[in-house]
Image (cartoon, rainbow, N blue to C red):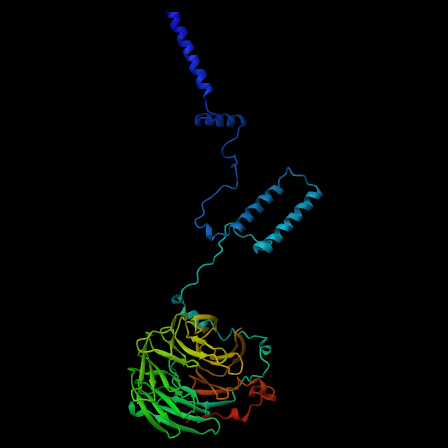
Length: 508
């Protein structure tokens, strides 16, 4: 009995053992793998410190894969692996293999330069970002850097300026007029030239008229009776005929004068503060004031106020109607440029509100060559001339001039634009459009050049500056007359100056 039990247990244990062995999986258990690794380590005599990783191309976590230049990174990794293989001591050192390695290196350098845009000796990072850091916003402008970046000691002159135009542009003004008490205020518009060749300039409390043909000077009006602080803040000639002049005052009133009769025709109210900008569109006079409003006056009717346009939040310092009379451009101290339709009413909103400027927008000029092309200039913190498509509201171009842009004037004969500037050089710059290559710099003013106006024939430009002088520049001479143009005073032989320039005329 006992022997039978023993035999049964032996048969049972052997049977289950064979069954377990037959059904055993091919994958080793974790404890078996650990035991095998420890045995192999003891047999080889190596340690974990000397053991190399299985692959040098192991994956790693990248926070923003879309911002990485993966093609460049893969090329850098592969080139490193190729260099390590070529430096293997087991490789043969024959001349043929050295030549092939040289060819491979030259091919890799060509690939870098042509496809990836890298230099042959470039040691850039493997994981390099494509995108640059974002440009800081306009409110982070360093005012000290803006003021002193245009130093007089670092003047850069274009050597190829003579190739941009075929005509001669005198470097010196053809005439200088003394303008005492000309207010040094960036937000005013104190100069206007009529199509009858009469220049109107506001000097503190009075408006003076200078006839460019005869040289006669007349005083049109004086507002000293309004108080010691009263002054003229803007002037603008009517477009056709040149017989009427609009005058804006510091107390918010707009006056209309008959110049030939030297008689005030009417006073138009509507503003609660000074009127710093005026612009004509046939019989409609637009006025902008420090009360942030733009008012359209129909000067033919008694109830002159036909529209009250409110969009700006600070003083309106620039107004300009387009040549076709369909669009009014307005600039203000709120750094905003607004484009208004001619049919706008008091409840209308501007067609476009453009906020790309970072300073006050005073300089406005419509192109006489291309419809809907508008040029604008920004103040000290902006320093840019921007070009706009008034139909679509898109900005076409922007140029940093390096200093405050006070006024803009288009050349009626060619695609050129003249800009006047403030600190640090107080110069006038002539630009070629649309390349915006600098053609000429005109210097002579000792303070910022606040105002500009063009003569009726479009050949001359007058500039008024805070140094209380008016200077006339023969900068827009028509191409047909350029061959017979007179030389400037600085170009006369022996350095002699013209008698016209040696004598400074006084406007009052």
